[in-house]
Image (spheres, rainbow, N blue to C red):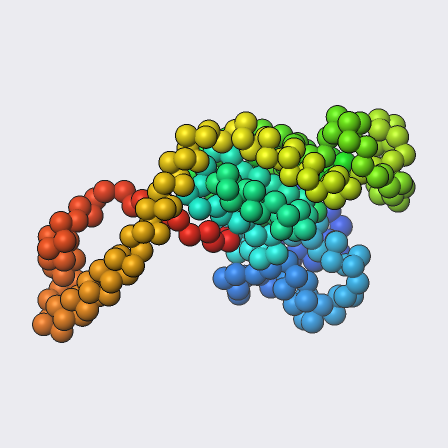
Amino acid sequence: MSKRSSKIFKAVKTKGRASRLLEARILQTSRNFPKLTVRQVFYLLVSRFRYSARRRTYKRLSYHLCKLRRKFPELNAKFHDPTRPFVKAPLPFSTIELWVEKDAIRSFLEDLARRHRIGIQVLRGFASLSMYRRALLRAAKRGVTKILYVGDFDPSGLLIESVAAREMGIQVERIALTMKQIERHKPLSLPVNRRDSRAKDYVKKYGRRCWEVEALRPRIFLKLVEKKLREYVPQEYLARANTKERAATIARPIVQRLVRGIRSEALRLMETGLEEGDIVKQLASKYDLNLEEPEPLEVENNAE
């Protein structure tokens, strides 16, 4: 074993020859790739080192990879997770985000969130480190102070909420499904999955039944979420954002024509041999543009 590997194992406190070998192979495999997903690493290990392609092996890999990624930021930065998108709202109200446990919930709430200028983060169960890394960077950039969470009232759904609060270090508020909503609206329940490792503590506290968000009547569900969004997003902000969006729509044909004209003019100046910096200055002067002013908020609705 190399001195570098010994230092790594000491840093992550790995015990057991098989575990150390797996972590060494993870590092060896990851070293040659600028971008990776966890699933890619799994299949690379299966292919190169003949690990079993079973779910148990995948869970073991995920555990050791998580340890390494938390300890080494340069390794963590290589991983991305395309399965958990963040749907950005147009002219977003940036201090609040809406997080949903399942993609089906996102599809149901997307129009409502868009109207209230709130972005939606899809978790798909327990979120990945890659998703949390993106969310933390986004929160620091935009000044996110609170996450509104929508998830099932069951052993996993409740833990997902607490894990998100721990990973993000900011307040996470469950806006659906809550026990108060269950008692009032009486959605259909399901038996708790006793094979879930979290079931024992849940049963002690809440009993043997659990509830999914989708069990609420759609109209009631939308009304509950909308009430919370109205509570946090000022109506003045929505009115101003709507006005900006209408203005952008009105101006779009003129802007597009101007853009085509400026591009043609830039091409003509380039063909004369003028330097790029001089071209920018000349065009900015002609169109009376101050390039030091901050760019306006985008109106488009894109997913990260």
